[in-house]
Amino acid sequence: MGGPFSLARWALLCKDIPLFLEGFFVTLAVSVAALAAALVVGVVLGLFSTSQRALLKGMARVYIEFFQNTPLVIQIFFLYNALPYIGVMLSLITIGIAGIGLYHGAYVAEVVRAGIISIPRGQYEAAESQGFSYLQSMGYIILPQAIKVILPPLANQAVNLIKNTSVLALIAGGDLMYRADSWASNGSLSYGPAYVVTGVLYFALCFPLTRWARTFEEKLKNRDKLSVPKEAAALGAEEC
Image (tube, rainbow, N blue to C red; front, side, top):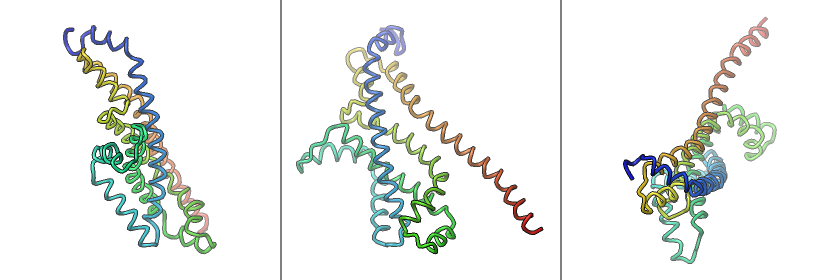
């Protein structure tokens, strides 16, 4: 069939492109569900990490250190191979969502923690003086202000999460990477076109998020630059 990128190989791929699109939508579904799980885990652990209670801080730290310092592949293999021994049977998609969600939840927790501690201590004291509980302070005062710090790195985590869905190929999860590898190894050995198309489809998912994060970060920087002269003018007016 000629070289690795010959027209004959591309013709075969075009005929079977629905197979790649099926994998694309599986990857998209797993990414959305895993990101939702990671956000829930990350926000809860981020709040635990900034809590005044040592037990909650310790629980969050143990979770974060474990998941950040063990490979995602091992965690996926554990869910796939070990859970059936204790009678827990999960579908491949569920394993992907749970494994990737729990893994990235540790990183989201660090992003949330960094956003929370970036808020000046005076904001906490003001909330306490108004009789707000810890959760009320977080929900009404701290987290709304921390959003602008949290969103750009959170978008980067979402991009990493999408790319990490490719680990499902190791357990025949039906994702984009698995479909591409299976198609290429099924007789034609057309790995070149298969991986080019796969890369383009991953790019189509990840690039908009990366672009949005960069644009949002620039917008925040410009807003901060504009706010400094206004604050200086306000202070000057008060002095007068």
